Amino acid sequence: MNCAAVRERLAELAVGVLPEEDRPAVELHLRWCAGCRKEARELDQAAATLALALAPAPLPSGLGERVVARIREAAGAPGSRRRLRTAAAAVVAAMVAVAGLGWGAVMAGRADRFADRAARAEQRREAALEQFRKVLVGLPLGTQLPEDQTHLGQLAPTAAGRVGGGAVLELVSPTRIDFVIVIVNGLPRDPGRLPYRIELRNAGGDVLRGGEIASLDADGGGQAFRQFQNRSLAGFTTVLVRDAAGRVVLRGSIDGTQGA
Amino acid sequence: MNGRPDGPLLAREEQQLVDGLLAGNEDAVRALYTRFARPIFTLGIRLLGSAEAAEELTQDVFLTAWRKAARFDATRGRLSTWLMTIAHNLAVDRLRRETGVSRPTLVLVDEVPEVAAQGEEDPLIERDAAVRALQSLSDAERRLLARAYFGGLTAREIAEADGVPLGTVKTRLRTALIKVRRANQEKEHA
Image (cartoon, rainbow over all chains, first blue to last red; front, side, top):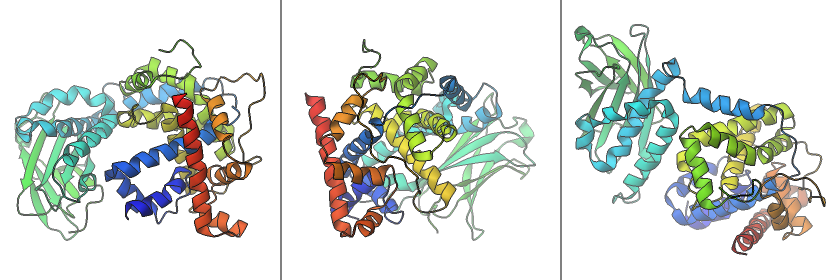
């Protein structure tokens, strides 16, 4: 969809009635077209004026504190299961955020320092994706849309694994070298379990090795990174983490990579 | 911060508030709530029809804002716009989920925003300005925007109901929004 076709639809988008069939193409266009994005923002502002002009209704008593409590709960109390589960995503996000500094730094394990940012995992993820998008947009990518090529997933413990969690990020790009980053957290550190190996699977049963985690930090956290020079990661949406004995301890799937 | 609790914030102050939200600062959450909860809750009542649903929406809006706080850029748009857009999108999504149709079906008593009564106690930030901006529209334009924004009617549905070409409705929607945008810009530059 070109700029003219998108702009013809921006008013409908702003007032929330753009037909569903048009929405994906318009939103895709807005991700990379700054001019149309600016126009969309201005029309959004105009549409919001309608809401701001409404005669105000009285607020329910105590709602403010309930809002504060929801955010406090979402941030996660220290040691909570949610915190553990989302911690890895925060580290992924932090790693992505340092992408602009070079993968060497990431590979050297310097991402460990970001582990303490885990409590705000979801917002970090948002921030990192935004930053990742900016980093890639700054590169000569032709007409490709980097944001569409970046896929995230969460890893959850299996019945055999019972503990820990993680996150995985894949870049699946026709113009750049595909890579996968896996971050784990809360895994057992006993020597018999290491190294943990990453496995990527597609629907056809093909398996790719996604690297291994040879050591874990005090929180049972570690990361693996692997580039795929001559192979596309498209379709490899299932991610398994196996311990040294071959037991699957974490499992997850990536959001919507393209079919192989 | 701005000395007037109900006065408009500078872009720098809006960014500070959102940065505080990003950091999980509860004072920032409360400050945002104080300023913006009423228009959000009001929109929730308008679109969802009950105080209970509006309360859920209000909580969801602040939670979404917290999650997406890193995306907010005060140099690109107003905080009120950002929050109201989140609120409208969440409400429309909810209606779509609940009704299982591609657009919400809303029952509205009054589709057009009221003009503030003289002397009315009005703690809403920016409401006066918003009402003034809407006064730049004709009644027909205001009604058209309201049928879409509050009523969820698509351009095609409005075209069919009014017996006018689809392209005309789209153009009118766009023209009306541009008028409001211009009025907003004039207000900001005044």
